Image (cartoon, rainbow, N blue to C red; front, side, top):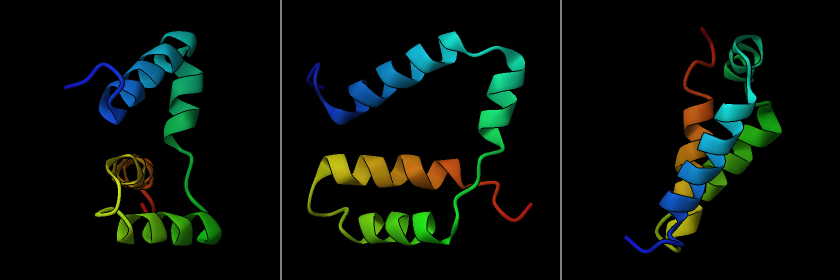
Length: 71
C-alpha cells in the first residue's frame, strides 16, 4: 500500500486525534450522531464509492461514525 493511500492517511489522522483525547472527550466523540443532512451526504458518497477509492474510504468512515445511531 502506498504511503499516501487514503487508508494510511485516515489511520494517521485518527491516531493523532486519539492521542489528543482524554477518556471523557473520546466518549463524547463516540456519541456523535449524524443529522439528516449528514446522513444524506453519507449515502450520496456511498453511491459514488465505485468512482474513487478516496470517496469510498470517506463514506466507510462516515458510516462507521453512525453505527450506533438509533441505540
